[in-house]
Image (cartoon, rainbow, N blue to C red):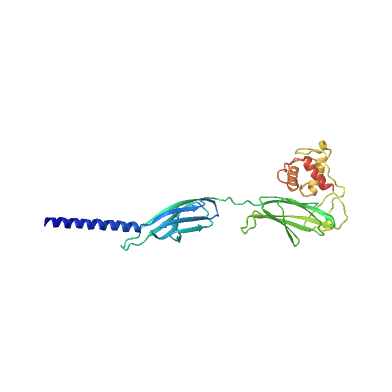
Length: 321
């Protein structure tokens, strides 16, 4: 009798052990696992895209969440248990979590879940700068049939358009163009700091005018006023050649340069760079006018305000044609 009792106890213990093994085995089958969860690329510039890739096992459903600083996890999207997901136009760095839930074991308890997290580093893109345009014409007043030249330089521009009358043409960022207008014409350059691919960047425009007259009046200077008629415009004399023999700089004077400071000032005033009468003294206003002229005609890096051989040659070629 005692032996039968021992046998029953041993059999009961055997059943308990087998039951626990089956329970553990059932639970382990229902536990989800995230085998891999990656993001590519891990570092981007603001506005670019990243792609998440993952592989899971024993999962019934998965979701990708973003870790918000103030509000915790934020659901981006429900996703398949295996696959990829692309997130576009990412603007800031952050952590992203893949959360997968296992299958229901029928016990009435919540299914088991597991998570993995990756981090994406986003580098902010500096705002684009406004284009700067230097634009002028020389001569700015001509007789019918004569030529004038447009000069322009730009900074922070990636594309430019020249507009006049009903014409539009794409132009280089720095350059010149010989024109033969038959009437007084306004010329406008429009530039943008973008590639024209759909996202508009900052833009700017600059206008210059060439006055065309049939008058034969010849004088020393050009005087433009609002609404002036052709008769009010004095033309440069054909022999108004500004040939400078001396280098000129800040504080130069006529009595040191054989009157060439006044010649320089007259040239600058005639072409709209200097808004004062010649004084014979190379002061701050004259230096600013020289810099503006150099920037327009010679380009960036040559606008020092010093009138040396290069600037003197340019003035001569423009005024002694």
